[in-house]
Length: 317
Image (cartoon, rainbow, N blue to C red):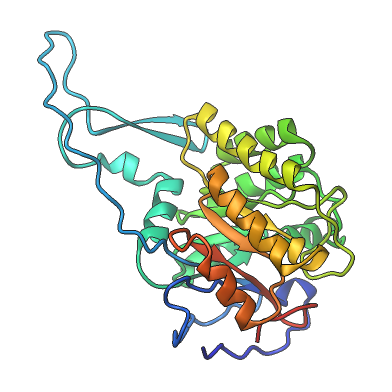
């Protein structure tokens, strides 16, 4: 696999990029990304290998003297949160339901190939990503902490600051945005509040990790993770929050246990996250192509994501 070469950037927030590897298409895949913006790190999401099965055709609606037939999807909008619900009627979705950020992201994940999207840290950088032609972007906690606080990514930025920054970003663009939810900012109850807050802020997806508090950037030494049980409970809490909100936000389950414990532990946790209901799996700081291949071989029907940083502690190339 030939990977693109990058120039060194002097700005600290300009040196991060993220790339994913496909589960099925790993061998021989030639990744040709769009031109990189010097402000952004890059993210590449992998589609599921499973062809989506369309919902069965619902029975025709019964006639009602009082109410007209409903469209196939009825849409409720709460601030930036869009909630799509199935309803009986015609076979084509309404235009408004098709514009749900999470729905658009899911369509992207279901499409073949590898999908690249840079990180953003404010409304302007998100607009630049969209204008460059990328189909999605994601918020970098590292970059937001640097741009908003002038501080490193060591758990200093708060839930409220991330939600506020995220709302400004999602309002500025029409492409789906994945939010960096760090470790959920506390226990399972905090995770549920974080997910619901990110839904209201308009995010299409949320990344949740298994680090302890205070957390640290994924490319630093000395990171620690919570127990297996607590890590799984965080993902289950996120799924519960999504159900309670009536949302279809994409849950990206990240583990930092590769650096903190071992590769075998990170693979075990990824399988457990998949069983808990995560939509995308993410092992941070994999150290080689062989490790990435092993990662891609588990739960092959789920998309995978991998993070790379020029000059980072561990790079798979």
